[in-house]
Each structure stands twice: as structure tokens, then as C-alpha cells.
Length: 515
Image 1 (tube, rainbow, N blue to C red):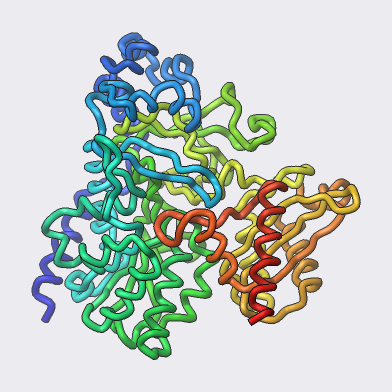
Image 2: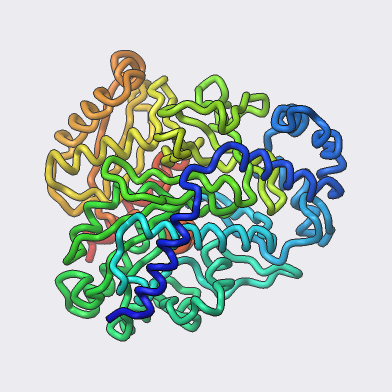
């Protein structure tokens, strides 16, 4: 009998009964007020006169009017570079011990985002919220006694002067509570291995020694890890070696495009749970099982204040950046099924910061959202107004129609004979003609997005598809940065990056043909 598991499950059930399922906007008001009070004597707080904002009858309005929107370049060039140069009390009291490295998607230079002790505590609290929400998923008592595989970036952080640097998954894993270490796999020694392939090889070699009940990590890299474990141990599916595996917690990107591929590697039904842990903080988590979407509840009372820019073309510049004068709305005024660019202010000294993601509310009363894409991955060169969630939905429709698995994809608007077309690359091992897939994607998107349909009748003159090995996508990620961690393949590329990508694809295909 799972005595410990029953005790843990009972404790979670009891805690859940005394937890407010639907936090209200008052939590956001108190969060903003506390942020301003804590940082009012910092250089940033004095510059923007937080003291005066706090005396306003409408703090939220005064805050939005007084402090401009910041992207990474603006806040780094004006403020965060001073932190990296050793100055204190810049955007948050004191000085952080960690800097989270983030490039968002492959190909861009690493950003260095402050991670304060308060932010680490916020992440820990959100993780506990995720654990307690398991009461809604009706997991068996035995589940709470199993080990948890957390595959992120290396926990062997780089020391850069006064700071320890690494991706947020590595920083978080290096700060896990002592009581959790007995459950945590692959353990400290393997987690410190910098080379991703070597780390996964060690996981495959040790897999039979562990009793894994849950896995956590970015889908594309977890997928490769599972395949490696299956291949190395000569298995038909992952449940042959981890029979008690019951849940996978995704994060970083929308999980739906990967679901079919995951299902093929399982021997039993799985519970899939989405989370939203960004380099800037733990944004949202899935608190209940759903059949139509994996919507996540915003964590509203945990050191992050949210604002939302209506994601419309008039508020974007030619580089896909939100314009500095774009309007924002608060949690009270959002509308369901409307795309917003996410703006956050946090206990890490991040102020009215455009995180780069777009979201939409699926249930305002529950404050549930789904990630719809990236601001720079909004494909609108000729008025098609395609967000990543529309692309994901179209790809899912193609998988269903042709009973195929598409593990990765990227797309760009490129010029051909003077006209614009959409050129897609699909990562799949299934055989289906490029022409058939191009026509089907075109039809799927026309049915899902009226703006795309209008564009196809005017400036967007064609659609082309090329199916390639999924391994080429992984090789591109490795070439541009490194495998594993927070690295994500860009769903949309600009023309110059896409030209580089196409050259890379041709080179890889030629090298394979020569073997």
C-alpha cells in the first residue's frame, strides 16, 4: 500500500479544498502595489516617481501612463547594463545572484535577465501550486511516491563576475528544495553535464534504475530523450522501462503539435499538463484537465503584474515589435478569444516588459489562457495575419487528415518571380507529396482565418511545402545555439534568416546523399 503517497495525496486534496479556484483582480492590484512599494527607492523607482504613482486614486492607470513599455533592448540599454556592471538598487533592491540566459528562439543573441531571490521564491511557489493542482487530475496515491524526470539545461552554471549564468531551467533545478532531491532525476551529477547528447546518453544508460512517474521539459527535447531511452534499451515504448509514468508537464511552447508523436512512444494513456515558465518568471499553469485545450491559469498573486496589448497590426512595427505607444488593458478589461501581447512587471525588477509572447483568454472567469505564438512570429507580410496558434491548428488538421506526424515546422513569406508566397518546411518521416500538403495547408488556413483567405485572393500568390527529416531541425538548433534547455525552433522566419535556413537544409541533404 502506498502509505506515503496516500498521505501526500490527502494533504494535496485538503489544501486544494481551501484554495480559491478563481483568483480575482484584487490579487493583481495588491501585487502591483507591493512591487511599487518595494522598488520605490531604486534608481528606476525614483526616475519614474513610484511614490507619486502610489498616491494615485487609480494606481493601475497612473502606472501605465507614467512608465513606458520596455522590450529587452530598451530596459537593458537604459538600466540592466548597470546591474551587470556591478551597480546595486537599479530596478530592484540590492543585486541579483543570477542572470537567466535567453535567446527566445534559435539564432538571436543571448539576453541576460536578472533573477532575484524573490523571483526564485515566486517560481517555487508556482511549482507547489502545480503540485497541489494535481488533486484535479485524479492521480493514484502511488503517483506521489514516484520520481520526477526534469530535463532542462545544465545546472552547472557559468560564473561571470558576480553572477551565476544559465538558462532558467538550469537555475531553477540548481535551487530545488532539499526535500525534493530524493524525487528529482536525473540527479545532480548527470544534470551538470553541459553537452546535451552526453547527458541524454547517461539518462538512457541509467533509465532502468529509476521509477519515473512524471516528466517535465520542452516537448521537442523530451521527445528526443524518450527516443534515445527507447533505442538504447531496445524497447517498443517508454512504459516498458518506466511502467508507472503517468504525467508529462510541458512548457515553453504549445504542446498540441507534439501530442501525436508523444502518444506513439507511450504504452499507456498519459496525462499531459501545460505550464508557462519563461526566463522572466512562472507565468501560468494548468490547474484542471481539459479535452478541448490545455489552457493555463495565470498566476496572479505571486509577484507578477500583467498587462495586455491588443495584438493588432497597427500596434506593430515592421520588425514585429510592439510600438512604444501601444495601448494596454488590465485583467479586468480583457476579452476572450482575442490575441494579446503579454506585458509583465515582476519581483526581478522587470517593468512593463514585453515578454515577446502572445496569448488569448479561453475563459476569463477562470483567468485561463493559451499561448498563441510570438510577436515576431506573426506572419503578416501581405496581410495574412497568421498567428502561430492558427498554424498549429492547421498542422494538426493535416496530421489528422493524412494520419501522419509532423514533429517540427517553419514558414516564411518569400518572393518568387516578384510575388509573395508562403514557403513551409515540415519535419516528418511520413511520405506525402509536397503538392498535396501545400494544397491542404492552404485550405486549412483559409477555413480558419478570413484574413488569410483575403490575402490568398490578392497579394499572396501561392503556397509551397517541402518535407524534410526532423533531424535537420534539431541540427539547425544545435548549429545556431545548442541542444536542449530552453532552445526552441522559430515557427516563422524573416526572409534573410530563411535564406540561411534553406542553404543549411540543402547542405544537410547533400551530405546525407553522399553517405
